[in-house]
Length: 259
Image 1: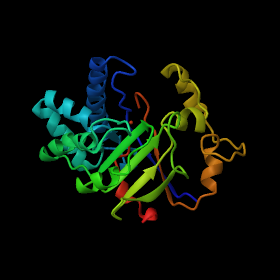
Image 2 (image 1 turned 60 degrees about the vertical axis):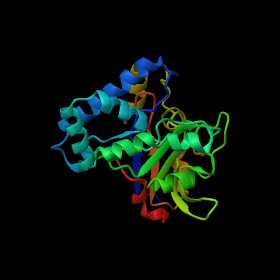
Image 3 (image 1 turned 45 degrees about the horizontal axis):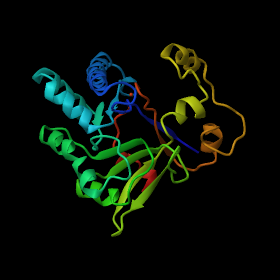
């Protein structure tokens, strides 16, 4: 049985898909500012009630950092040290067709942010069709010891079972702890059957009235309670990111059940 359910609260990064690039960047700047405000507002609450957020893409954070004043930068670093804010290593969500050199470039911002005092130990890739095998060695060489992915299966295929965790072995035998979660759309709109995809106003009543379905089903996308109850994993990690969503800032290496 599952003892704990850890949710990764974040906003999906889709540059130029939902809005023109300039607007997307400005929205993500606002998301970080709002997340910092919510952390301040909940700082006196019990630990499990405090607001937490994960920045899915280091490229977004670096753009925010470059335009933020010293006061905002100090607030950001304080939130990271407090464990309420986390930054994932990759610049953007990538196509699996990119070569090794381009993937390596995707970790530049992580290095720059580390130099500013932001520790980065994990990486994310969401809503993509897959990842090349060389990703494992690349992340390990850059000090990343945990990886979370949520494959979009419209044009790709995720490993099974998911949700789940496994050791992803590189060609030379090194291992990377990897969390394999459902696509962000699947969790609220298919697995939890919330609907309300066209607006926040439609989604809110569905969230408030949601109860786990008891309908028997053989797949996670249709019935997560049924699928989860058949597992023996102590902890399940799920990405709840959407195009304007948020996480408990956790390092993937914290999962002792997968070791």
